[in-house]
Image (cartoon, rainbow, N blue to C red; front, side, top):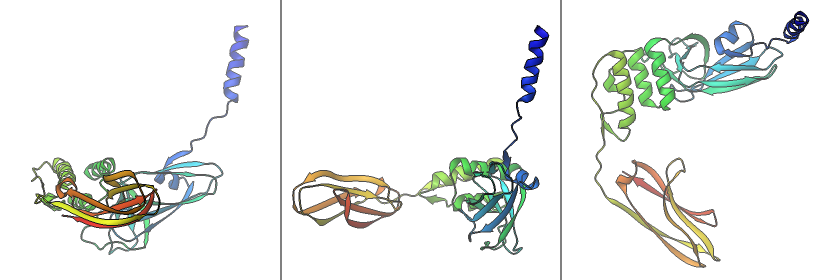
Length: 275
């Protein structure tokens, strides 16, 4: 009886179909012939400066990882090669083609910036460069300071070339300088915050409210993110004088806008330069 039960159990296990692997690294999927690949530059050497087009050649759904640290080589030998600085995941149903813009940075400082030209897959970055790209991804430092940090590893640029010694982005600069300095086993000079003369910024403007309405006045940054609210109240019909003021040192230097909304509809936008 026990033998019969065991035999049935083994038979059931053998009848269960094994699940085929469907999750691959980009290079592995290409090597196995599961996907066709086309990589094109988008101009520039930081930000989403390349597009990876993947085509599923199989009849099953594939999950593809375009890994941070993956190098791609430019077909124009006078232009820089790139290293991907943020992992992207692509799901490809059968026979599907997907184009994915990827964050990448240049790894040949002495060459020109690549244009809208072709690239081919290369090997993964190793050692300090791989660790730096993973740090950039973790901190979301997809910026010019991070590009300089990459060149400090790939082309031995001075650590002082990462950012500036004084500025509003000193925290980012110091994080990158510190990381590269540790990789190179050297000391570094920390950047300092930019010291700005404190002053009040103020202004006023009029808006017309035709009927009783909810009036909101806010200040937003260049990305349209609200950074300060001046007014949020119900106002009677008429001409309303809007007064606003703020201390410049409460905000990073840059362009801001004071916006008046009546019943959630924008009626006025004033540019404010914070220095």
